[in-house]
Image (cartoon, rainbow, N blue to C red; front, top):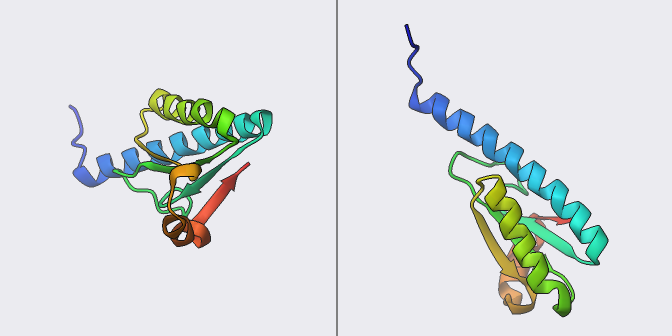
Length: 110
């Protein structure tokens, strides 16, 4: 006899999966940033430890201009491998207002 899985249980499982996926991606970002001379700024639910079943990974890519595209692609690919939606921004094209809004609610990697 199969057991019934409630919506709340499904949401809890997906929340845990996304949190673990975000942790793995951030670990990969740490290594990439260290090796390539840049950093990633994580903000939103992942940075504030409040991920939910429908959360994405919010990232600002802060790398030298010649590495920016490579770093953006790296994050996109890492998130895709983990089936984790991502909202990726380049620091170079982000407004100062946006960066000011997230400044006190972000985690720098590495």
